[in-house]
Image (cartoon, rainbow, N blue to C red; front, side, top):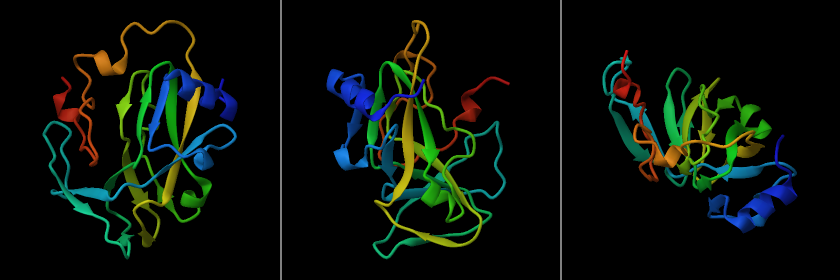
Length: 178
């Protein structure tokens, strides 16, 4: 089940969902709109290697916006810091974002119960498009968890994305054993 607006508000009141900054006007019928933070990043190397630490270069989106180019993977970040202690959060693109040809995640739309951070976005585009810091970029949807969670994400020793950040974080695939 997906939480309704009233249930999201109840969970915020209880502290099981945290959104900062929070503004009631961004609460939808069954989702909460999140916004693009001011930091973007691109990988330094054109060819990425899943077994090595692929480094990124951070930069800020200027006030006049930044034009995304097809064929480049951009890492972005949400303005909003979130905590989800009792539900499974999913991040989806807004239809208005998709209609501009912008994808905000390649595969990583689901968070884990206990995820406490900003969301790194895997941004790509179908054609050149100008984006701006602070623009609505996606929406969080919260699902009910069936059963008790043994270990929350923020308490896992091997969780790769626990460090609080305001900048996008590169892939940590290289930390996996394979």
